[in-house]
Length: 237
Length: 113
Image (tube, rainbow over all chains, first blue to last red; front, side):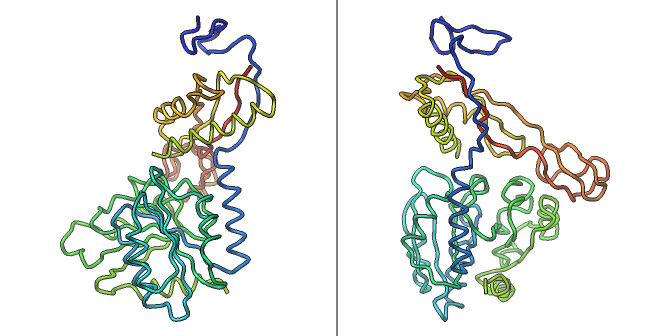
């Protein structure tokens, strides 16, 4: 009997395991193809309605929710913002962002560690996103998995707080490699931590030479105007 | 952590293929993972065994083929081998590298009866 699957007809040639009656079937399909198909549909919807979709990723606690709440509170004069926020549990983030006046939808991913294109496709059905507006997709706090999943977004933003350490771009290269913008947050805490901003930017550029960098603090307000200018510049017209 | 999600994708793909071809049992699945893909092979095999229980692919062997990573150096216009994102060019030491191989993640084939 075959020790691997327990069947009676297995043969082991060149240490590989197969069955005499087996047919070899070629598949050659990308495992992300299903996700990518839906991501393309999302992206077409965003383009058609001139919605700038931004996928914001970071480790838990880097300050994504605080930055979004502050940004929308300050800029939401014409109600131009919607937010999809992903967390494993609770709607605490959605409740906080709602105080800014944005339309918010919370996705609870349960045991899943990232948002995927399918979740976003349902979320955009439920949210009535205005034309020529900005959609922030706040991903699940995680520096690994979200990088693998295309959501159909225009741009990816990775946020890194100065309390996390300047070598994170090297340690979590995938997410920095696929990002368009790196935001260094909690700049007001720089005097209290050993974080070398210059070195961190060097590491990020080493992983991704084209990455843009912004530095800010939602607490002191430093750097927020550059972030608002960046958003203004990227807004689809 | 996302290996369970990926295991389910593999299962979905092979179940559909098996159904289309009226096959009853999948004994082996061969997949390709590029060196740069953030996937843990042990977790993937573990996850696949778990999600395949009670399905057409129960006890199927998941064979993983590695693809080494290669990049094109824009500065010295040559192909070089790399191990990770952020590695520099082994010829000019620069970082202007464009990945050309190593980020694949696909199901190549399966053996079924």
